[in-house]
Image 1 (tube, rainbow, N blue to C red):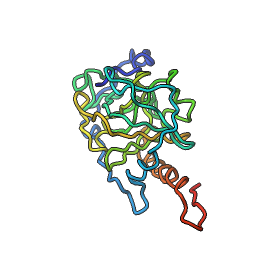
Image 2: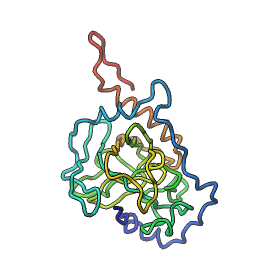
Image 3: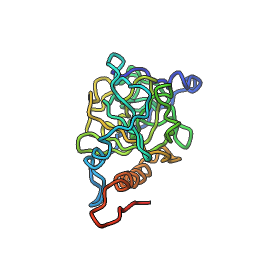
Image 4: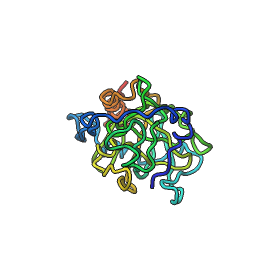
Length: 247
C-alpha cells in the first residue's frame, strides 16, 4: 500500500506552481530493462546479497513497509553503504507523463524531494530512483552519507537496477521506488496495484552523490564501480595472498 509522500508537505510552495505539461509519448517511454550482468567482471545480484547478509543496525527502531503492517525493517550499514530489505511500492511522483499522472495514480503529486540539475522535478516513468524515509528519530539518512542523488543498487531475484535517491517518504515507512526502477527489475510498475510485497534489497552507497540526478548513465557507471568496490574491499583473499582492494 502506498501512502502520500511527504514531498507534498515538504514542498508546498512547489506544488502551488503551475504543473509541468505532460511530455510527448516518445519521451515518456520507460527505460529499457538492463541485463543483470554488464560484462565478465560485473557484480551480480548474488554478489551483493552475499555482502549484505548480516545487519549492523543503523536505525534506532524498525520501519513499516505499509501503513497497516507491523514495523519489521531495520536500516543496516557498513563503512561503505547503508541497506535494507523490504517491499517495493511504486512512486510515480514528479513530472507528469503518460504513465505517471493524476489519472493513473490517485496519490500522484507533481513534486519530488530532489530535483534534476535544471531545477525540474524528476520523471518517475523514465528515471530509476528510490525513496528514503524522511529524517526522524528512527534514522536520519543525512547522518550516514546519503543525499539526494546518492547512487543505489536495488536487487530483486537475479536483477540489479542502479538508481539514485530521488524522493523522500513517510518517516515510519520504507520500501518504495520509481516506476522506472520497478520496470528495470521486472516488477509490475502500475502505481495502483503494482510492486511486490517483499524480497527487495536496497543498497545506497555512502558519499556517492552525482550532481545530475537525471543522468542515469552516470549513475549506472558510478554504481557499477561502487558495487565492485563494495564486494572486493571485504572479500577474503586466497591463502598466502594479500587481499585486493579497489581504490
